[in-house]
Structure formats: structure tokens, C-alpha cells
Length: 289
Image (cartoon, rainbow, N blue to C red):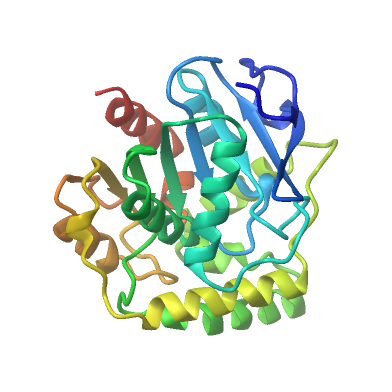
């Protein structure tokens, strides 16, 4: 790999200590963190709406990186990456491909969560030679029922969170049961384990661009998922109020080479974080099979 980038070689260190590097992509700097073995097909993480490097659950990243090379990054204009954030999923996907190629990779696996799952679907369809396997979590197809309501739901939860001094991810990502609230609080604590060199929060213009992209994705004519020929693992909680869980079942039914993880009980949008041990085990089995 001869790409100009600024990061030490990946290692088995934990995500909370992983160094943040950068790579130039058409004149913009994309920041990323990389850990795990330095061989094998890398697993690229594509994050959710408003997410930055520090929004990945360290239990999921560390679990996957125990056996796989894992790379998380901020898309253009988000967090520590420079540039202007695109307002379509397709442009975000093409940026992600440019980032992957700037690192020198010619084959990768993808893990897309929520909006990242929209992006992963576009990459898998447009770049079949680049993508080996795909994991889609808490996500849905273009035109999926309820997806166009995600922006309004998110803004409402954000405003309510500001008034109540509660992180909106608690209500958006987890169920309102005692178990769901407990899982949500534990997740938020894990996100604070990194105490140095933390990423920047998403800016308001970037947030607005992402909201526009998601609304467009939700209102698009459904795409022909049969054109995604890679093996795909599909996962979610059974009660996702952001991207309603029936979209997960729809994805699995329409993708020709899919495996559906039984929906996680008493879990919502962040089911893979709430059930991080089970998810990591299943994801590694899928990637290594």
C-alpha cells in the first residue's frame, strides 16, 4: 500500500486508544482509525446519521478487530474530515469508495449501520468487484416504509433531549423498557471510554445535509436489490423506531444471498450494540465462512 496517509500500522490495541490518522482524498482530508491484524480483507465501518468516529461501540469494534482488520472513518465534511458534506446517499457512497481506494485496498468487506447501511447498499451495487461481503444493521432499502420520517423523528428527539438534558440516542436507539433504558445507559458510558484525541461532533450544516439525503432515500423508487450479488448479513432489534424493523425483514427477503439474524428481543435501532457479544460472534462467523 503506497497511499499517502498518516497512521501507524494497525495493531491489537483497543478502539479507545486507536490513533486517528488521515488520508487525502481529492484534496480533502478524511480521518480514520484502524486496528486489528494488518492482513486479510479489511472491514470498513459506515456509521449512522450524525455519527462520527466516537459513535462506534468500542465493544463491537474491539470484538471484530480481535480477528479482523477494522477501519472506521468520517465521511466528507463530518467530524474531523474536511470538505462539504454531500446531501445524497449516492455521493456519500462514492466518497467512501474514493477513501477506500486512497488507502490502497482493492477488496473490502462493509458494515453499514442505519444511514451507513444505505451507503453500503449503493457501494455493493456500484462496485461489485470492490466489495466481498456486506453486513447491514438497523437499516432498510431505498423507499422503505417509514424511512422518510427519520429526519423529523431525529429533530424531534434532539430538541426533546436538549430540554430534558438527555442524550437523544437513548430514545432513538433503545426501547423504553427497563431493560432497554439500562442497555442505553451502558452504551453511552462505553462511548465515553476514550478520553483523549476525541473526534469533533457533526456540524449543523453537515447534519442538515445528511437529513436531506435520508429523506430522499426514503422517498426513492425501490431499487432492484437482486443486483447486489454479494453475501449479506442482515441484523436489527425487533423494535426499531427509526428504521422500522420490517425494513430489515424486507431487505433479507429481497437480497439474493442474504442471511437474517433473528431480530434481537427488547432492542431497537442499536440492537447490534445492545447485543454486542452475540453480534460480534455472528458477524465474525459470517465474514470468515
